[in-house]
Image (cartoon, rainbow over all chains, first blue to last red; front, side, top):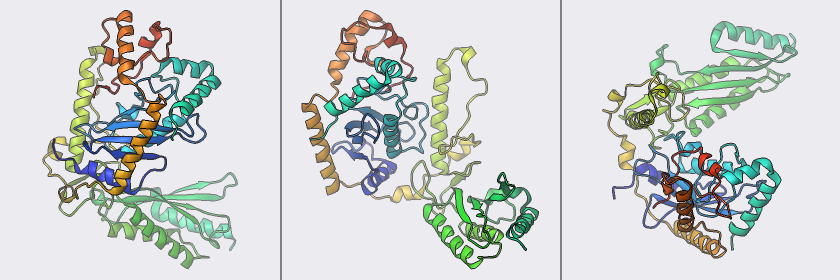
Length: 151
Length: 294
């Protein structure tokens, strides 16, 4: 494997030295481009109290192309499908090399606070979110309680 | 002279000196509330040599100049936090010194002096996250953002290639007749650059001298905590089982539309009866999703 780009090293160091509240990201022992991530559910959202595991991978041409991110913990959200894939513009066509691991994870945390059922990835979740928001929120809370808790 | 007359006199003088470089906002009572001016270093009007700038915002409380105005420095360009904080401290001292007298022009001069002294970007290149060292070739965009020429060229080459790939997929009538527009990585403003010239630049020096990464004890501790959380959540059935989801998907996709490759679509979320709602396939509006095959 080619040497790790300096930018990745710098980002990793900064993530350790100045961690973002509610977010932790640690590189894997065997692959420094693969990060284990925990995002805490934002306050006043149905995901409050949950600890969500994600995986983040920095592709070969990072930061010219976006990191690949996926939820590992089950989550009930209109923009996240049952494989944990996330619908977020900055991970696709709105990626910019000025974004970083920390800004990407902050955006994902913000997506938990502001679900957008008009641009769905999980259609039945989005549908329920639109026709019966209170029931959808109840489901999201129930999933958080059931799947995203810590010991 | 009344307070408002003194303020009026000060602002008239500022407008006479700075002309279009200053903007004054009045409140509904006609009292001046806010004075704004974007300040550049003095470079004998050679704008190509201005590498930094900042917008000074002065809010005037009704008692000004007998009390201190409220100062904000907005949109600093090419300046790192410590330089901006230094300017703030000297502003504070100046305001104190000039209590009871007009201070805005003094502030503008003070900031201009500071900018002239540090007229070299002290910020980091947003692409490689390293600073600018003596001898590095860097580029200032029209929007006052700084990149190593080397880093910016990589960004421009990649975005143009991706743009072309997208265009090639479109039918002729949908293609963008205007062609590729380069954008600033930081603020997405359109920028005009000569990629061929930029790409001949050498990589920045700091990049070569950077430290290597080491796994610290803190890191090991975090890794352990992550592992524990994963094990706990897995025990409670909270971890997404990709294989099971994909198998389910394969079955359903084949019955619904055999031409769709299984890896391209997410599962029909939560349809317990297994019946495929055609909405699920058609409704996917996000293309190029993360391919889960690792």
